[in-house]
Image (cartoon, rainbow, N blue to C red; front, side, top):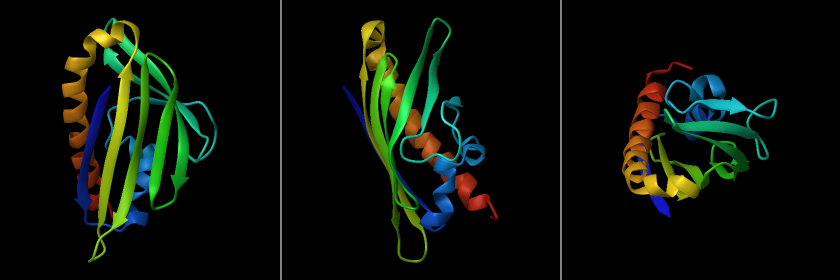
Length: 145
């Protein structure tokens, strides 16, 4: 099983950061992971979507269900289909001065032939996760919304 954990401080309050996690148009500004909604409406507890990883013949589609969404505070998920079992969360914590500490952590368990790629994929995932948080920080702080 692969575990990851990272955080970033963003110069914006939690309610200003949270939409970048749950609003599809804002989420696309910082994440390179293609998402296909399976449920209609806003992202909320119970919402489902598919994400795609990899490239070429080693491409995986993983079904994700949001298990807990608390506006301005938490977004947690687990996978329900695909070759990668994934459980994770984003947590937002208000900082003195009006900023937000955005933390993420998760566990991934690779199944089938994907298990062979776990060491390589693990390094890439850990690197990509922090890069995405840094990109989210830049996008959120530059926005005038």
